[in-house]
Length: 214
Ligand code: 5GP
Image 1 (cartoon, helix red, strand yellow):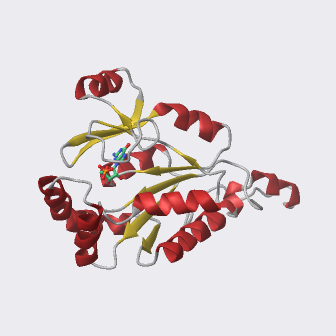
Image 2 (cartoon, helix red, strand yellow):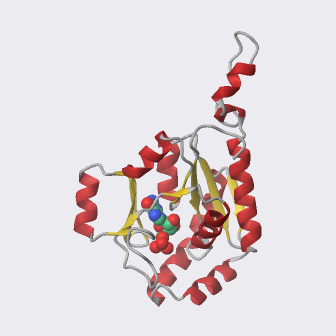
């Protein structure tokens, strides 16, 4: 990987239909070491989705049992369904220094930012709202009501882009993946993420430890 020692958490957000799954899949081809933190959800499985790979599909009762047991780092209701980030294996992977990518809605990303201020927060944007509608129709994975609900929510979600570290427009998939990969490489090369650089520092001088801008 070249730079970096500690595991990096990459949090991706973006409205439904923006292509988060496609970007992640293509990125995984280029960076097979990157782990994906599978979420839990009460949403019905879409055609082609695999339990334990796409999501951990749970009924509401089991989901809420896990909430009560403290098994989620964060959870939120999104478009009428519950979604949550399982504490394990995420914490174990990060502790082991692995790079992990997760997909969260804007609420989930805001909660994670408090828990993981050193993570990198990336927002995926569509070229236009019209493109979003077209992509969602083409995907045909959700019922018309579910699709409408997601489209109505999109402008409010897009407004949150200003709270993210990076924004990438997913117009051309390969270009979007290249940009995301560039973000990851640059973040891994941050001086603050490489404590081993201390050996080059002048006596008594510390390696920068803060986040960007601090
Ligand atoms: P979808 O049903 O289209 O797969 O996902 C709906 C929304 O839930 C997306 O914005 C997705 O990023 C978000 N999401 C997926 N997993 C989680 C999670 O674990 N926590 C939160 N807060 N949002 C999630």
